[in-house]
Every structure is written in structure tokens, then in C-alpha cells.
Image (tube, rainbow, N blue to C red; front, side, top):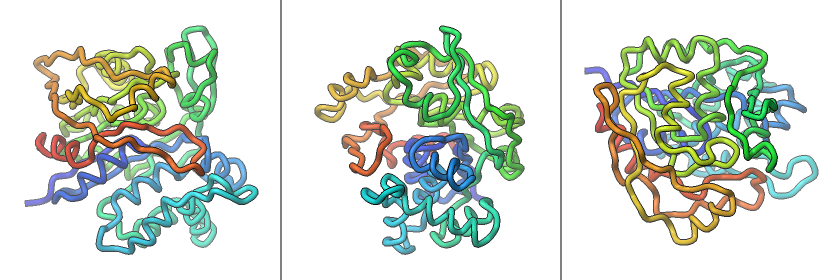
Amino acid sequence: MRRKRIVCIGGGTGTFTALSGLKKYPVELTAIVSMTDSGGSNRVLRDEFGLLPTSDIRQCIVALASENGNETLRKLFTYRYARGTGISGMSFGNLFMAALTDIYGSQEKAIKKTCEILRVQGKVIPVTLNDSHLVARYDNGKQVMGEHYIDEPGEEIGQHRIVDLEIFPPAKANKEALYAIKAADLIVLGPGDLYTSIISNLLVEDVASAIIRSKAKKVYIMNLMTKFGQTQGFSAKDHLAELEKYLDDNAMDFCLINKARSYPKGALTRYKEEQATPVKDDLISTKKLTVIRKSLSSKKIFDKPGSDKLKRSLVRHDSKKLANAIMSLL
């Protein structure tokens, strides 16, 4: 019997967490990764190197790297420079892939070569190879271009809700991504920032329709916390409704949601400073949607290194628990 095919669509630490747990199971894994990031290392790659963003690609490669491979190489790919004019905050992995792009003359070839070097157990596919940016329109009529500015908005913009999201200029889907979606047995959306990590993929031409047409079961991993500027005040039902606005009503077959009531000591106090709270569970199972509640959160607080200039999630899903819950759907 062939191995079941699981396709994870997203980007950032959420997809990294899901892949890290799933790679321990006998399945064919594919990560389809958002390509609109414009902050931190990616801003330098886009503005100074003229390349597509690779931070989310890099995280997925590290997540799927063989544990029998070179541990030092995996650590290097997550290393971020803390000093140096023009290099502070940059990650080694992003610079490595930029160098490979020069050598092989193609960023797509550079990504595939990096997967070979780290002996990736699965596939990591950019959702598009077009250079595009996210554009958000808010309920006060204002528009903001650039994922970084949507992800970390100022206080004035952050108090308003996003009412529409688009990609400019329009982007065509990577054919490999469309093929993986069509061939999948299970499609996993999330966890991750609702607009900038998940919905951003659905805006690429043909991706949403490919997911809808796919015979695969579809599961949405509900976020643990709301996020200022994106999902402030959102309940679980709000998250799902917004996702399906860009897909289709009743597009999801399953929703996995954390049922744990306890969080690591001090985590909620720190989240309160960021105007974030645990996502309220108000979902109800229907004939189409099965809501599955399990203890999925990690007991650790994830503190980023001082060299990382961007905001990161303090509380995350536990990779083993999450992978086990996803596998149960097969």
C-alpha cells in the first residue's frame, strides 16, 4: 500500500511545529509555503538581493530535515547573526540559499538543492514563484501593503479589523503545489497567523479552487491565541468563518482545537501586554464539520533569541500531540 499523503499549507512557526511531529510517521509529507513575507531577513532578501522570501521555506526545511543527518548543519540553518553592520538579524540559512541561487541561477533550484543537502523527509514547495505582496483593507477604509506591516501594525491600524486581503500583483500558483493538493489524502491548514500565514496562500491564483476540488479531507488547526492587528477579539467561529470566506462555506471537514485550560506560568500576562487572549471555543459540530477537542498546547514558553527582531509566539502547539491528533484523522 502507498503511504498516505499529507499536505500542510501555511508558513512560520505553526507549520514548523506540525511538520516536526508528522515527520516521525510513515506518511508522504509536503509543505506548501507562503511567499509574501516582507520583514526581517526577508526584507533584505527582497530589497537588496531581488529574491523571494525564504524564511518560512527555511523553517519547513529544518523541520523536515533528517534526524540522521548533520545536526550542526541544522543548527546553522536556524542561527541568526546578532552583530555586524548589515548582517545583524539575518539568518545563516537565508544567506546560504541566496548563495545557492547565485550558483545555480534559480531560487527554485536553490530550494531543492538545500532540501537535498539537509536530507529533507518530504517536499517543501513555494506556493508561488511570483514576486507579490499582501495588501490588507481595514474597516476604516485604509489599506496597508506588505506582510510585515500587516503582521505588526501600528496602534492606529491595529485596532481595526481586516475586511479584505489580496495579493498585488496577482500571483500564479506553482504547478507542483497544485499537483500536491490534488494528490493529497489530507490537507492541513494551520496553525499560524490567520491572514499572513494561511489565507495568504489561498489568494494565489487557483490554490483555493484546487483545495475545494481536492478529494482530500481538510482540517483546520485552530490557533491557541488571538493576535493584535489580525484576530483581536476573534472567537474560534470567527477564525473559521474568515478562513472559509476565502475558500468556500463548509470547506473544512475537521477542526482541531485545544481544550487545555492551563498555560505556562506568566504566558497570559505577557500576552495581555500584546493585547492577545486565548481563542474562545464556540464551535459546534455539524453534518459537514467535525470539531475535535484535545489537549494540544505545549507547556513551554518559547523565548526568541535577542538577535531576532520580529515578534514570535510565546505559547505554541506541542508537536507530538498535534501530529498524533492529525494522524488520527487518517
